[in-house]
Image 1 (cartoon, helix red, strand yellow):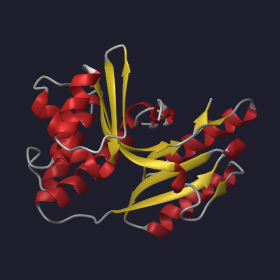
Image 2 (cartoon, one colour):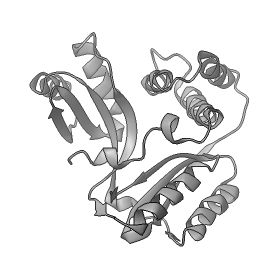
Image 3 (cartoon, helix red, strand yellow):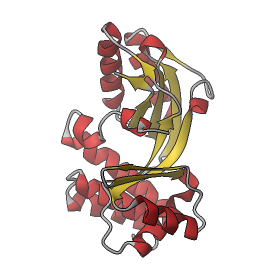
Length: 237
C-alpha cells in the first residue's frame, strides 16, 4: 500500500481557513459519534479516538464537551454522511467526505467548486472503487510485536509499515475497534500519532505545472465548504 495515505491533504487543523471551521467540523463528528455509539469514551472507541485527535489538533475542551453534552440531551441536528466523487486536474481522483443536514445544499456547494476550477464532479461509484476505506494507526513500536498482537486478536491486517521505528498499521475500517483494543491492551503506554479512518488511494496520479495550482485551489475551495469534513485524493505532487 505504501505511504499513499499521506497523499491526503494535511489535517483539518492545518488546512482549514479558520479555527472556527476546525471546531465546527470536529463538533459535528463528535456529536455524531456520541449520538450513535454512546457518550462514554471508554465504551465508545470511535468517540475516544476523535477526542484524542481533537486534542492533538488543539480543539478546546469546552468545544469537545459541548458536542458530547448535546448528543446526551437527545436533541439537535441530524447530520447524514455523504460521499461525493470527482475528477481533478491531470486525471486525478477526489473523494469529498461530508456531514450534512441538507444534501441539496451540500451537493450544490461541492459542484460549484468543481465548476469554478473546470474540473468534473462524478456520479456515485466513478471514483470510490479506486480507494480503500481504511483505519490507520501510526505510533512508535516494533513491527513484529505489533503484528503478533493484531493477528493474535484475529484482526484482519491489510498492511504494516515500519519507518525507523514509526509503525503504521492499515486495517479495514470495520476492524477499527478490534484493532485499537488489541493495540491498547498489548502496549499500555502507546501514543498514537495517527488514529483515524481515511480513504486511501490504491494508486497515485502524478501532477505537475499548472495542474498543481488547480488542485490546490480545488482542495482549498472544497475545504471552505461548511459541510465538508475531509478531502482525499490520489494526486502525487
